[in-house]
Length: 147
Image (tube, rainbow, N blue to C red):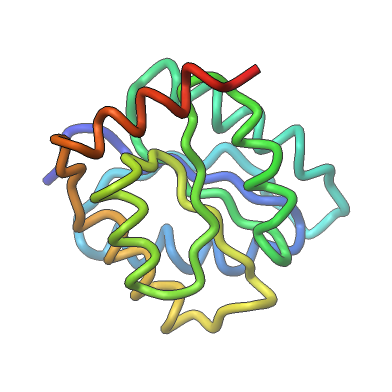
């Protein structure tokens, strides 16, 4: 079992996919943390993205943000220092986000991906490690040019 939990948050549109992915990971004995929401009542995605980003900053863990397209979550998350959020729609993107960009937040669109593909993307993201080397210089540049 991995020490730090995978941290999840969504808006109302991402609720079902979020709950499905949490159940999947818990079935694999992975620790998870759900920052909400808990119902399909309309919510504002920036609030949940902010909660998750603060938690990732505190724990140095990995986060998963889910909204209808993943766009709003990724735009919001990337406003936070030290957060490298990647909107991924396939396994290759998720692997490269971790290996080359040291992404620490995966953004998914619940209206863009079915559960099977979303699960595969999640597995690729969580199963990949940052390669460092020449990629570290580029990741450092991301922080240095951020406003």
